[in-house]
Length: 90
Image 1 (cartoon, rainbow, N blue to C red):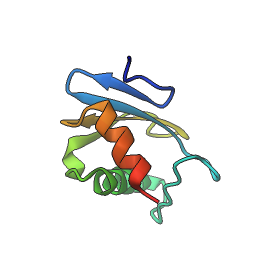
Image 2: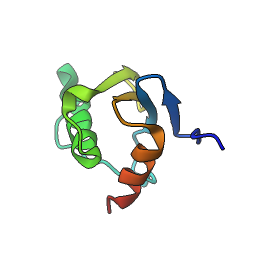
Image 3: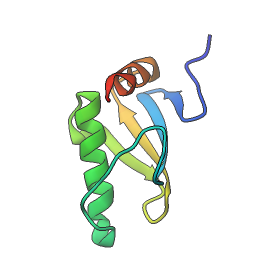
Image 4: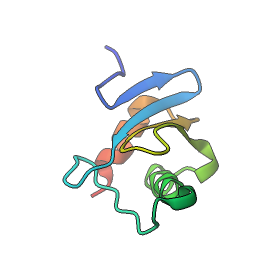
């Protein structure tokens, strides 16, 4: 059984999470910060870290800093645990 799904894949140091920022997404993360100077991206990482029970420094925006398609590296947490913790967030 693989730990890979369309939005999540295993990585050597944890997992990589694909995020498409759009209203009505399966996982909705609403940020109040505006995009200029990366404030919205930093807030996204803080919110995901809180949902995953990690420090914001354990997450890194790997791609998509200026678009809706983003790739977030989650260090120190296997893909299966990322999936479980995000499923528990309602």
